[in-house]
Amino acid sequence: MVNHEGQYDGSGLKFAVVVSRFNGHVSERLLEGAIDGLVRHGVAENSIDVYRCPGAFEIPAVAKRVVELKKHDAVICLGAVIRGETPHFDYVASESAKGVGQLSLSSHIPVIYGILTTDNMEQAVDRAGGKAGNKGFDAASSAIEMVNLMKRM
Ligand code: INI
Image (cartoon, rainbow, N blue to C red; front, side):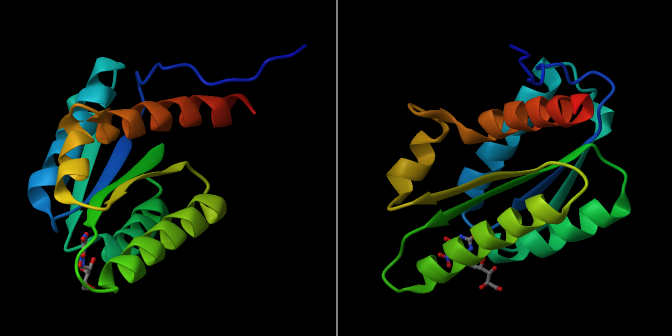
């Protein structure tokens, strides 16, 4: 058997994080978790570029532009889409997921989906440094693993 997997070693790698400001008290916690995850795995703080956009709907467009810059080894997308009273949630959640998914397939570098989609604020807070961990940290770990996996292939 030949096993192919990426190591959790971020030394020498350069990352972009695209984070939306909507529900900022959640998305900023995700950003903290992602930076913590990158730095703990050996990424230098000055090798992390953070790009902020208005809402999760805008994340794919900014991430696409970041990919085109060809300056990074991976892009991490972070945001918080929280269900409200109207169908707006469904459109924003689905378009942002679709956009990041399409970009990840067409991009020459990994594009990581770290956008929370939750039924309520409590579920979001739980996943942004609360009792269910920090999905920003998890997204950072996935980004490092994917960069190292792709480099081996
Ligand atoms: N943007 C989010 O990031 N999260 C949300 O929960 C959200 N809701 O529910 O409305 C949201 N809307 C804004 C959207 O992302 C765009 O910024 C806006 O529609 C302008 O294009």
